[in-house]
Length: 340
Ligand code: KG4
Ligand code: ZN
Image 1 (cartoon, protein in one colour):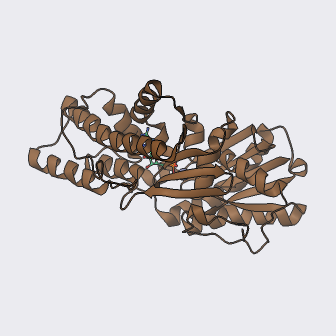
Image 2 (cartoon, rainbow, N blue to C red; image 1 turned 90 degrees about the horizontal axis):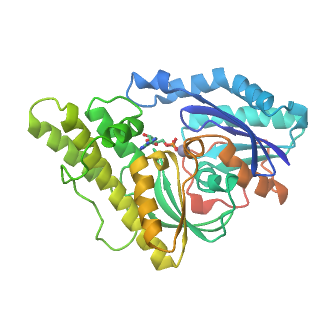
Image 3 (cartoon, rainbow, N blue to C red; image 1 turned 90 degrees about the vertical axis):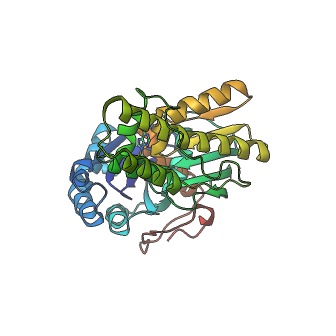
């Protein structure tokens, strides 16, 4: 099936063309970073407006890059949620309009389902596997028994990992989005320079907490009494990143061991982080583990990632009606047959 997929849940307008839920023919991403950077975070109303301006152009470009026309498309998958409701509705409205005009089957896909199945666009990974989903809004550990079969094993009790990166970057005056900047600075710093806390590391269970690390960074910065720069700033970035990475790695490995899972997928924007990649690579080398990180373009928000689940559901006859609505909050383990 030749699928057109659309993602507008946050600050990226994206459209992709994917064959049979595996072969990516195009994956166009229009970032809105320039719009939101001056506010230090995503402004929902501005995000919706920018999606409206970009959606047709992005869909046209995705079709063009895939060397097809709209008439070749056999189905449409769109992010139904979770995300910013106004932003989601732009993608959903565009998808519904095309589905109606061309009489095409339509399906709504969960944003995190897209993220954790994105690795299947690159290689086959046998089920079951453990998925660590780390983005700006999520830090969740899921047991994945198949497409549509997810069990939450743990989740953040406060900030998401990406949110912690963004907030720390903001308080250090490093701009938005912060994850990339901290990652880059951390590469030049000493991760052992400052000992930030590792919240819940020794606690039972697989929940996370990142707001405490962020507060520790804030207190550290205040104690200095003067702006932090140069090597000191790199050391701070490296030490903060090391704390987040250690908690994510150790708890994920513990969950994998307890569940008897030898395959791990790490997905979402924070999966671009080089420290996290290195930490899991080292762990995998010591154990009999397969750890898969998608390529960075498939970790960040993109439409192609929706195709794995979209193709699966459409192929088994599931359809969203033209009443399909956005779902700002939608727990992944509640994805079910009703998709409208
Ligand atoms: O998945 P994503 O693109 O959007 C959401 O669904 O939230 O994730 C965005 C998050 C942001 O918080 C961003 O700072 C973070 O991913 N991020 C990173 C890196 N690249 C993006 N965090 C740490 N290191 C990176 N290299
Ligand atoms: Zn995302």
